[in-house]
Image (tube, rainbow, N blue to C red; front, top):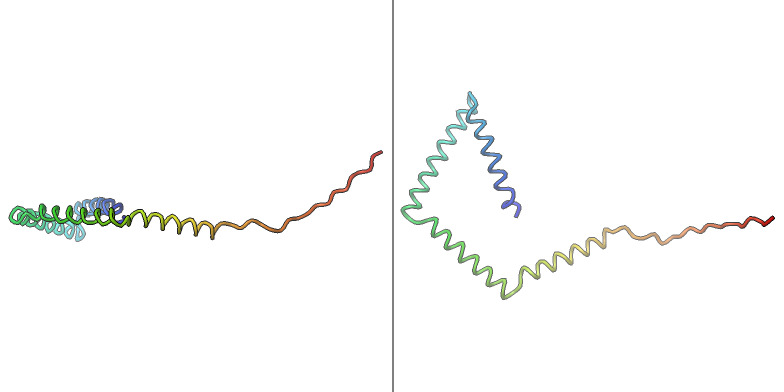
Length: 117
């Protein structure tokens, strides 16, 4: 989950950093621009391979098939529900263990009545 959430953020940050480096003069700028050229060439090659072999469609079909299998397995075995119950039970157990205990000692105070005049 972390990768799914953080991946795009890291990618954007890396892209901004690469853009800044590519506009810099000197060795860092040269490396960034050369790296950009490699990425563009790799992207063009992957696009040609996809057009020739239909890689994107095949990958999509495999992912869809895997998702349906996982969904059917969950429907039969209630994996998600069982995992959720276990996590909730574990969280409740931990909460009980780390909760401060109530004090069992009581202090008594003695009061004396003032005599009536």
